[in-house]
Amino acid sequence: MKPFGTILIVDDEEIALKNLARVMSRVGYDVTATQSSADALKLIEKRPFDVLLTDLRMEGIDGMQLLKDCRARHPDTEVIMITGYATAETAVEAMKAGAFYYIAKPFQLDEARKVVSEAMEKIRLRRENRQLREQVENYQGKVRIITQNDAMRRLLEMALQIAPTDCSVLITGESGTGKELFARFIHHHGSRSDGPYIAVNCGAFSKDLLANELFGHEKEAFTGALTARKGLIETASGGTLFLDEVTEMSPDMQVKLLRVLQEKEVFRLGATQPTKVDIRIIAATNRDIKQALKEGILRQDLYFRLNVVTLNIPPLSQRREDIPLLASHFLQKFSLEMKKDIHGISDQALEKLMHYPFPGNVRELVNIMERGCALARTHFIELADLPDELRESRAAVFQKRDGKIPSLEEQEKDYIQWVISEVGGNHTAAAQVLGINRSSLWRKLKSSQNP
Image (cartoon, rainbow, N blue to C red):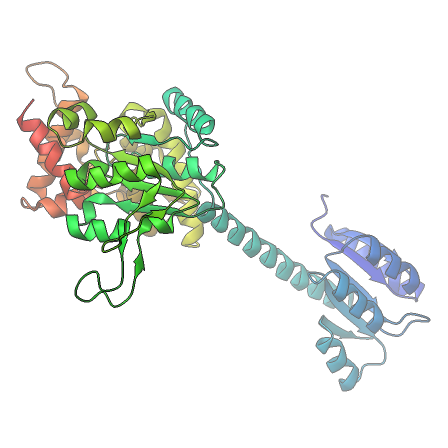
């Protein structure tokens, strides 16, 4: 039988020692037994045991000393004391020193076996909780890009190549494809990984607010400016500044950003002298770059400064082989966080995921798996745990037109319109269901109206 716990048994009475060792070995524990407390101390110095089962009264080194030495060297070892001279005082002393349990002689072997089993269960739970905490910390603290798609692998190789440099990077792709994840990946693997990483969504601020956020201000630069304030560009000095939705910047803000890139300095609002900064800029957009340049939404001079290296992240619909891999990853992450014992995804649910167009890309898949883990009533995410719009998506999206199978773009347009109708024409609610922001939804609708 494979051992499922290690025990060191120490008792100077030979018969008692043999009986305990025999019983514990039959259960399946890996048992080391000795009559010498001095030898036991040497064994403890060499390696940890899960449980120390020791007599209290022994010649030379007594059980109390073994207990203290063992707990000092191996805090996770549980110690069980055995004695024929049980008193309330010695029991209290042993428990205060960290003993798991105190067994008085004479005792039944079944009693000893039960106490050891309880000690082993405590050890198992402690280790399991520690592993869960470590896994959750790993998920939260590390930048991981999971893929088996060839195009994505090539992008990762390029990201690793440029990470140690300070060149500017422009990341393009639909909303929810993982553009910021790539930015964090580059920062994490670069020479600036110990420096700050600051992310700014340029589309979330008005022109004036964005200027203040990025460049900061001097004291009394405007009414209410009671103290000077660093902007995010200064805050990111020594690290990386990620500008998401950079094409949402106004033209004059783009000019100011261009100066930062060229001169490596920033003017706070109200300042007369520039402040030097040492930053790497990574920018991202979900717009079509050529169209943005053509319409004047993105300045050409800024584009050429940002576009030292471009990474174009493909939508999830173009890398379907990643769907089960990512779904499994997110399932494990959320089941750990929610402390639920979920083993996987049912075949029916997985089939639905594989045929779904994912207009919200990976971000939408994250939402689906979080919901699935929250609602799961068995060890698997079932079809019933998926959102209604996903479960019904095949009938709504996959329909032939004039006897022909529609393209993926046509399917996405139909699906978006169907979601909008299902939420009563509320575009904000539709964007939430799709896992994209309202501006992305507006662009998709405009694109479908102007082919």
